[in-house]
Structure formats: structure tokens, C-alpha cells
Image (cartoon, rainbow, N blue to C red):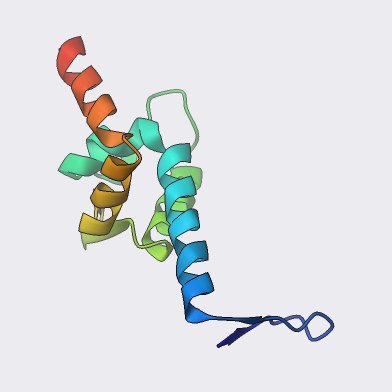
Length: 108
């Protein structure tokens, strides 16, 4: 059982409820950052994730670290980010990644 850290509002959560919340967080992260998925699918450095003129590397780095906490990203080395198998699976279930990758191929 999981408990809230707020002593005023004690809520016990089952592990199934926690898994559902974790899954929803992962889905939200993938959806919000769907434009990055083609690059993250192949693996790329922090500076290559967002486009020029977009958010700062600091902000991008914070978003990428959130992806790690949701289990959808990992860092094969210091400055490389890549989708995990879980991240790829969820993105495919949501039909996000495949449509973006298809779009990337068409644009080339």
C-alpha cells in the first residue's frame, strides 16, 4: 500500500492504482513530447532533441529527466537519451511513434 505524504489527507493506494497512475504519467509524457520521439527512438544528445529557437537545453534536460522517472527514457551514456522498450511499447499502443516515424520518412 502507498500512502500520501500529506498527513492531513491520508489516502492508501493499492499497487494496481499506483501502476495505473505510473502508466498515465508515462502516456502523458510521451504525448506531450511526441515531437521528440523520432530522435529519441534512435538515441540522441540533449542538444539535438529540440529544434533551434525552441526551449533552452536546461529546460529540455529537465523534461528528459522526467522521462527517465516515468520509465520511458534511459541514458546509454552521459549525453545520450533513448526510448526504453516500455516507452516504445506505450508510444506504439498510443499510435504516436509510428505515425511520427512514418511522417519523418515521407519528409526526407
